[in-house]
Amino acid sequence: MIGRGLLGADRLIATPDGRSLRAMVAGEGDDLVVLEAGLGMSGLYWGLVHHAISPHTRVVAYERAGFGASTPDADQRDLARLADDLQTVIDAFPHRRLVLVGHSWGGPIVRTAAATRLAQGKPVTGLVLVDQSDEHAADLYTSRTARAADAVQRALMAPLARLRLLAPLIRTQAAGLPAQLLDAVVASSSTIDAAKASVAELAHVADELQRLRDHPLDLGGLLLTVISGQQHTRLDRGIRARIVQAHRDTAARHPGARFVTAERSGHLIPISEPELIASEALSLLHQRRN
Image 1 (cartoon, rainbow, N blue to C red):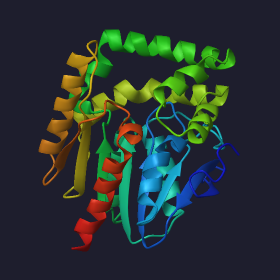
Image 2 (image 1 turned 120 degrees about the horizontal axis):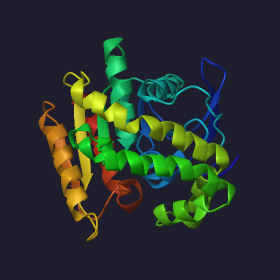
Image 3 (image 1 turned 30 degrees about the horizontal axis):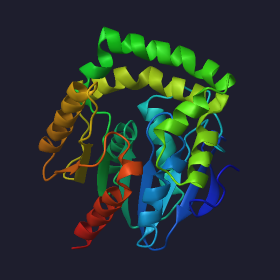
């Protein structure tokens, strides 16, 4: 198993349809923080955040279907399916208080799972959305140009994996992780199965964000923190500004939500400012106790 023991104990969790999801758990206590990854990388990239949280409470990261030791999924990988897998992981770890942390595409996944749990009467303490894919900037994903770019990316990912060209791209993205963890992230995220999993998820992103914009999820008064990366390059300055504004809009539309800036980060806040994410997740648990 790639990266065995790097994020505490490894555990294979059975899904209702007989697949396995590899979860990585550390820490102790009745509280639980679950980390949901963005699109295209193994949950191992949460390593720095995982390490920052585990001395204080129990924390779980996992690999979505097709990544690393998790079984590929032949079903469509839309938000409902992804949230179902997340529910399976959550339910495998009994808890009293629960905070879900979602990065990038993981943001809509944890929100979908939280809305379902609340509707079922299952308690959720709070959410931390880390530079999430945000429906308030849905036009960045749903325009004709964006959809064409997605189609090209979907067409190239599996061939890049077969030619072993996907690995260096992921290594560049995840630079900043410790060497052993970086190697594990690259190995788990650059296989043909991982590439196919990314393609299957990417096929739904634009339509799902448009649906969330048109039909907002009911999160009630759930504690919510929105963390938004502030760094940009000259090329993506305008896009970054629109994404930050979308994050502000998400926070403004939710009662009592906090908008937090990650001043040293662009998109990959789990690597550049892991301590900020850990602090916000633990803060939500503390607020519920009070």
